[in-house]
Amino acid sequence: MAASKSRLGRGLGGLIAGAASKSPTAQAAAKTVGPLKSGSGKASDNQASPAPAAGFEDITVTQIEPSPYQARREIKPEHLSELAESIKAEGLLQPIVVRKLKAGKYELIAGERRWRAYQVLKLKTIPARVVEASNASSAALGLIENLQREGLNAIEEAYGYASLIRDFDLTQEQASDRVGKSRASVANTLRLLNLDAELQGYVAKSILSVGHAKVLLGVEAPAERAIMARRVIEDGLSVRGTEKLVQDKKAGGSGGKKSAQKGGTPAEAAAINGIEKKLTSHLGARVALKHSGKRGQIVIRYAGNDDLQRILERLGLEA
Image (cartoon, rainbow, N blue to C red; front, side, top):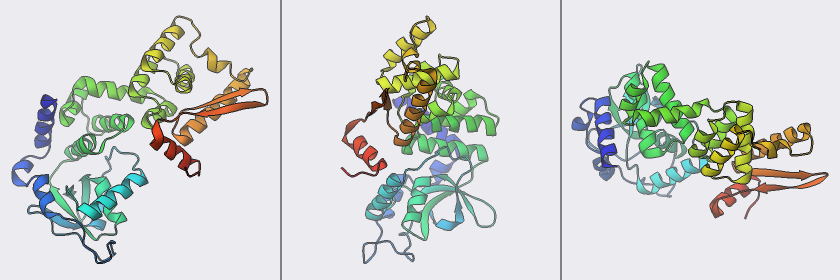
């Protein structure tokens, strides 16, 4: 773990030459960027942020543009609301990072959730660290920020690496050096992009783990892979169980036979699989449709009380 942190530190220093020596640390900034002050306890349209730390600037929120290289594809509204409430109560603990564009505009490098939280609070300005960075350095720094601080899901991480390699003509090794990861780690993550959109969605929503996905990549035919993925979700198979399923399939065993036999006829089985797919995608949870004749059951799997509450809210219900 210590070696990993050291490597990431060197990577950040290489991205923005001299930035660490010229600017105070985020901890120093946190001491001076305090909680929001308001007589009513609510943010008003005219309210501005407290003064930023030395070496940082207050920048008008509307002058900032999102990065075209942003790897994060989804920011959950509830997470944004929680962050906004935290900023209102405790202040901004780490200013965002931007680079200056033409015509008085700035491009966001790191801190999109913080920037959007300020918009939720209707604040005029936000403390920011302004740096000089190339397109490639900007993209890499934004990706590192998300990986280290704000947690991309595995699919977002894979698209982030792919963007670095594609948009800046980097090799996998060069991209891994940029973000302080091993080449093997980057290569394994990029393999997830070989999954079709349905399975990528399952991984992004944590319905399937990365371990499950890597095993399923051993199935070459996308249609067979999708059937097996639904079988894994329906039966709640472990990664080891998924390995056995794939091995049985390759050995000519039952593989996805169970799913194929649903409903009695191939047409009914396809219809049931389609319904399961839609329900699973809509609820973000494993769903199995057990159909027999004119009656059946819909089984929704959940992991803990919080997950159950989320599913109930998605269904428009209150616990």
